Image (cartoon, rainbow, N blue to C red; front, side):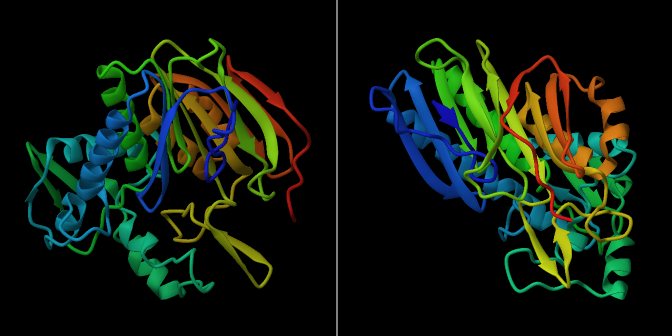
Length: 331
């Protein structure tokens, strides 16, 4: 039973003897799949997707009327938001401190200049410079249930952390309702609950960078009595090539351009999917040496697999990982 996500693996449900219930719904701008092996309760899956939709309605930068949309359109005035939104923003600010400002939730105006799903286009220098001037997580002011941007031109984008938070909340909901064995896959944010039905560890396939989505670089084995998260960030996931230059969605908050480090892919195994979300992005932003010095400081960190631009890879932590072959990184 091998698990892949849509970005770097997908859930394989083809084992004929497996007893399971599973549903796939398009939410969070991606295909999300929840599969329960024990107990077989489809109603819980539907309730979990309702919960996912509720969180999306709070945290999305594009859904009109969401908490984040209202903060971004408040022209610098305080805006009352839900406690969940405060929690996610506050965690994002913490990763701003942790990363020395490289992970920044106020990157919204900058990320809004780029479109990695349409016609390849590089924003002009003036637009990038103006947007970068609005990126500073320290301008976010939280008082009780209100959030304020001291720069009215700034914009919060929780894309580097919100999906992990939602995956954690869905997994917690399932466990609280008696689920003992399940997989939550929110378009690449994997949370494995318990063990496989046969009592063995879950097997997660890590996609080969720049290869076909079905090509594997290696296999990771995970599983606990509660839940464990696997998240990958890669420069090949959302990208385009223009004039022989690769442009990807991990943006340097100081230049506005796709960041250039020695890391092309970072897979994080953590107790929290939100932590894995933020950490995987941070590793791509900082590079392998700087990131390695920070990993053990993170509560709930279990392990990491970092693939470098020279085709080599680094394994951190005590994790069960098997590489299946070399990585061919295009020049």
